[in-house]
Amino acid sequence: MEQIRTLSQLLEHAKMVGPMKLSVARAEDAEVMEAVETARKLGIATAILVGNSNKIKEIANLLEIDIDNYEIVNERGDESAVAAKAVSLVSSGQAQIFMKGLLETKSFLRAVLNKEVGLRNGKKALTHTYIHEIKGYDRIFFVTDPAFNKYPDLKVKVEIVNNAVQLAHVFGVKCPKVAALAAVEVVNPDMPPTLDAAALTMMNRRGQIKGCLVDGPLALDSAVSLEAAQHKGIKSEVAGYADVLLAPNIEVGNVLGKSIVYFSENKTAALVLGAASPIVLTSRADSAETKLFSISAAVVLAAEKKE
Image 1: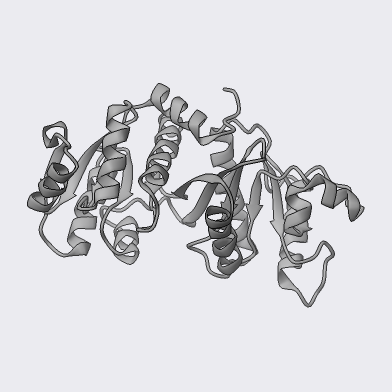
Image 2 (image 1 turned 90 degrees about the vertical axis):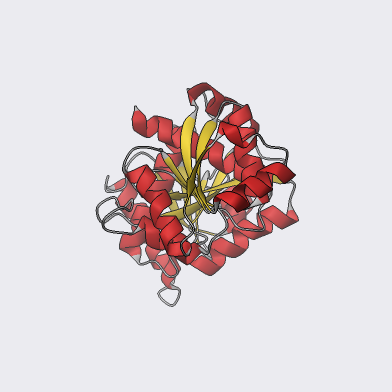
């Protein structure tokens, strides 16, 4: 397939490979319902709505959504019970994608990690990735990990890279360029992220990390700006061309991802990777459009897993 370079192209590709079925945990949220309904109308996804049926129907009426187009599972227990029921629909094969509705992230993730009905994929780490289309750039950026792994060690960073690279492959990026971000471009023993970046680079060159090109440490400007990299005298196949921006820790990833959202003209999606099925976990502050793009990304990933 051709490389997906915009989230509008992602939407069109999701129409081609969909529909997939969502299981929405506590679907009592207007923007979630709006995104799910748009996805249904576009032929991207159908959905099972799990939660208080009266509240779900009330929101559907307010949005003028025909609730007869959906299967509702009336679960009126606490958040944990709702999340567990919703995730069980995915692990049992009744749905292909798990999506967070109006519930706390900790309850949502507890369901994902449930040993009996959850979506654990062996010992693989769960990682979070922002998917950004930014005006002025000719490609999608994958920023990882902005939400889950607080201070990942080298072993976890390898998993974060692998998950993001697999997602980039689904977007048609044949050999994603991964920038291991740090504050400087030299290895400094007093700055641990530079040591991890150098190790990841060597692991990639030795074939321990496959399907991509990794380089680092790279500062953000060198990763995304060829002019900056050339001005600094950096010779790298990744510098200036990075697809994946690997954050050294959660603060860098979170601030970088949200800076893109609020300081640039952009379109954004987000996914949780590393589970047995795609997971849509968006913020309450995210727009219905962001939720729709996130559903689309999950559908494309689910279609790839199905193949």
